[in-house]
Each structure stands twice: as structure tokens, then as C-alpha cells.
Image 1: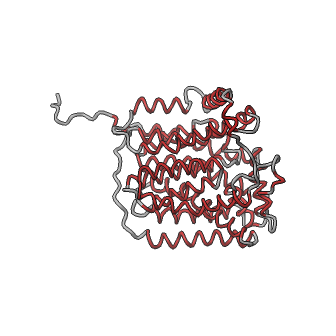
Image 2: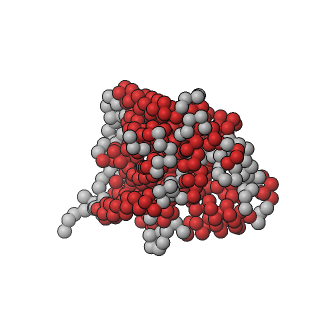
Image 3: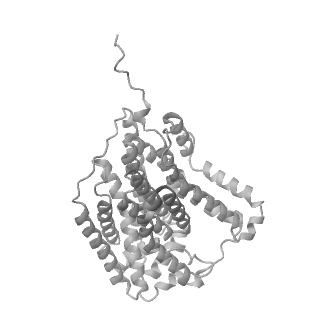
Length: 452
């Protein structure tokens, strides 16, 4: 068995979960598959990796833990799908066509071909990934795939050489694939997982907005994402930042779709699951999960209960890991808040990274501005609550830089680009969510006007 096969099993399991929880609320046609297939990867990989980590903590060896995790997640998803997918699908309004959409299709196809080529070439040039891949994520995955040594992934001896206090979802995804094959270190597992998360992020942006605002809007949003230079750079790095963006975007889409269906409970549960999985991926995901939880509670009120309940299992894993396993590491200090001289450095660095996101005339921020100018904002602006997690995430990033105990300039030079990249998919999605669709911006001829 190749190392990519377990990832496909987890992906298939995720599809059953997604298809079951969106049953009766899904779109029809290509947009359904462009949404369900990319959303299935974070659900399948994230859920099964949580089970894998729990089985390791319970004393199982890596191989039986990996097999049981995937098969249980697959069987549970299939059973739920068998029960719920027989419900009749609700009719979904099909947005009217946009006559210039063919331009976006051609551009998207060209960019997609280049992205696939870049992923292949990146895997050949950096088979073990960039620095953080082999020094943090893949290195800790080797511990999780080695029988009797899994707790070494959080060993305090790694402080200064790695980050043993970081959450372990992405390392568990890779370790589970290695445990299936019995070949820890096989480069096919992290490379395949990296490619799957990168492609899924683009497709989720496309299919998610297609299902909400039409095909033209989805294509434009995907093109803005593909115009982001740092996205291409990290698509080859095997870091956890793109998977984190995938979890966050999936959680936000599910919440928006649930809100449009009178706070549909299964979709809310799926959103809560993905948000908590983001928190088990990186610490930044915890900030996002808290922001989305706040937004859901404000907007849905009592209807927010399914979201909160679905977030509990992964949140409990994070809490137990932080309390019982993660070595203490003082990464921030509130005393640095008194040093207001840090603020200009942080703002300048973030502004520089925003400029470095692309090149004129295809800079993503410029393209977003053009989209706002051409399409205009929907009236009234609905679902303004979706901006809360993005705003809280940005505030969290700023505060983390301000309070860092590491050298400020070093921290900014190594992390500012990644945090901007993490926010870009959420920013693009939120902006296009607030805009009118292209089909509604054109002025239709008045049928009552007499033709001359």
C-alpha cells in the first residue's frame, strides 16, 4: 500500500459525512461536487486523525490505531449517509447566467494547470518540505507513527529545536498514513496530504461561493486566491498553514449555509466540528474557533447549540493536550504591551506582507478592490456576523506579535507572511459574500419600453 492510499480512505470517509450532513440542503449539478469533494478532505482527514491520536493515547500501537481510526470514521459516516441521504433534496435557486463568465473559466483552467505543475515540481525540489515541515510537522509525525514513542512528539527536550507545544492534528494526519504502510518518513504521505489540502482549498473557494452566489462569483474568488503569490510559495512547503485555512474556510462556509437555511442543525454541527479541528491544527485556529463561536452565538442565539456540541470532542482533545502533554513554553508576555514602540514595527511588517501578496496588475488586494467597485455591496448587507471571526483573528495575530517573547524582528520576518496567508481565503470569501452577483449588476432591458 502506498502512503497516499490511507489519505484517500480518510477522504472517502469525509465525503460520507459531508453528504449526510448536507442532505436535503445541497445544490445540484457541478457545484455540488465542487463543494462536497474538497470539503470531504478536512472532515475525513481531521476526524480520523483525532481518533488515531486518541487510540495512541489509549495504548494502541500505530498500525491498529490507524486502521481502526479510518475504518470507524468511514463506517460511522457511511451509516449516517445511509440514514439521511434518502431525504428529498430541497430545491435550490439557480442563479442566472453571466455572459462573460467564460473568461473566468479559461483563466481558472490555466491557473489550475499551473498550480498542479507547481505542486509536482515543488514535491520534486523539496521532497521533505521546507524548514517547518521537516523540523516540526513531519518530525513530530515520526514520533506518532513509532510504537511506544508517540509521546515524544510533545517532549520538552524539543524546545529550542522544534515546537512540541503546537497542536498535533496535521502531524497525526501524516503519521496515520505512515502507520498504515509501516514506513515512517516516506515522502509520499506529507507530499500527498499537502497537495490534497492545497487543491481542496481552491475548489472549496470556488464551489462554496458557487453554491451561494453563482458560478461567476465562485470563479472570480478562486482566481483572486490563485493570484496570491504566497499561496503558491506555501503550496509546496508542506506547512500546516494551508490546511488550517482549509479548516477555517470550511467552517465558515457551513455556518453561512446553515444561516441561509434557518440555522440548519446538521450544517451547524459540521461547522462546529471543522472550527474545533482548526484549533487542533494550530494555535491560530483556536482564536478563529472562538471568534466563530462568538459570531454563531450572537447570530443564532439558542440555535447555536448544535455548533457548540459538535465542537466539544476536538476541543476536549486540545484542552487535554495543552494541560497534560504540551510542555510549558512562554511565547507571549503581557508586559510587552507597555512597549508601544513595537506597534509601528508590527504594522509596517504586516503592511509589507500585504504588498508582497502579489504583483500589479493582478495583486489580490487590487483585484478585491476592483470587484467591490464593479459589483457593489449587497443591500442590505446580510450576515455581517461573518466578519467577526476574521476581525478577531486579525486582532489575535497583532496581539501575538506585540507580546512575543522572541526577537520581534525575527518573529515578524518568519511568521508575518504566513499569518497573512492564513487570513486571505477568509477575507476573499467574506468580501465576495457581501457583494452582488454579476448577473444582478447588469441592467436588464425594460420589457415595457417600446422597441423602435
